[in-house]
Image 1: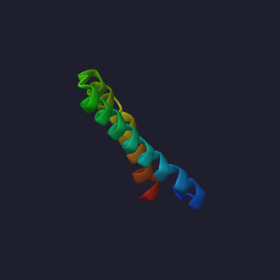
Image 2: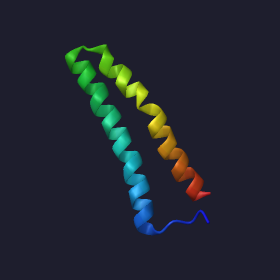
Image 3: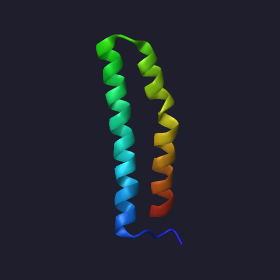
Image 4: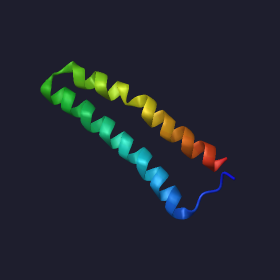
Length: 61
């Protein structure tokens, strides 16, 4: 029931990579501009990243 096809795995893993990249870009933008609200946004995105990682873990095991 938890097994995924290769294309579906690619989508799941690329989603996790995309969230990591987006969080990193927003954090870096906050450092460049000196606006700490961007850092807050990057922290607010962490639950979505954790959710994506949980989905990958669920399907893996």
